[in-house]
Length: 161
Image (tube, rainbow, N blue to C red):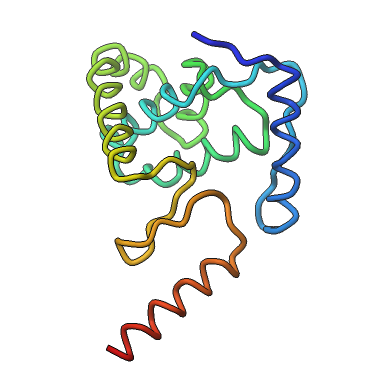
């Protein structure tokens, strides 16, 4: 697994302060502390898919915990132990999660990779990308005003046609 240069990653994470200043409801904290930066997003995505399959009602709570763990708590969400801790934090059995992970990890990874490739084939190359009205991709983190402007334009066009 590729481990990013810590210094490079810490510089990259300083950009989170800009996003955080634009959205006060979100707590973005540049990377600090002893935890290594994640080696990639595949483990977190596999973990989320597994939680979604095992406990569908916890899907959004796990999604939220992953975001908080990464952007606010600087936890290594590519580490299976950390992912199991997050499962416990949403009130589910981490041992059960890890048992099923061993059985399903490869298949879930294949699904994540296939979905990634499908997005690339559709021209989506930025994370995040929001798809408005199923046709308009808005790449990257944007201020709320950007989304409001696009949505207003779409409504105006649909009313005039």
